[in-house]
Length: 75
Image 1 (spheres, rainbow, N blue to C red):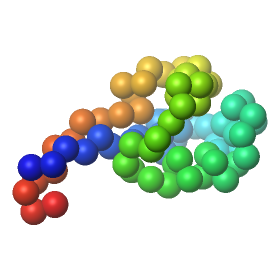
Image 2 (cartoon, rainbow, N blue to C red):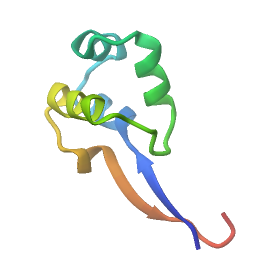
Image 3 (tube, one colour):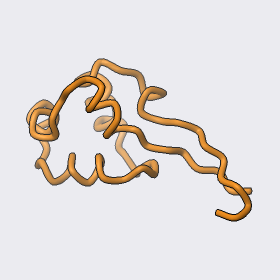
Image 4 (tube, helix red, strand yellow):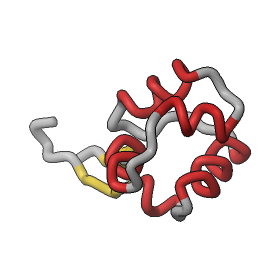
């Protein structure tokens, strides 16, 4: 059995009714950066600065952006 950390940025942003453009402006990054982060459901490689910025902007904790999800042997 493998392990997977699910990345939930897209759902957190939807819950908080925040757009990618808004978040890009808050973090001073290109909107394509946010698009790529929203598009994936696997934990991306992030700097501490970016993760902190996401949490501050979205008023959440890192654990709100992550979900532990063990994969079955078939996966």
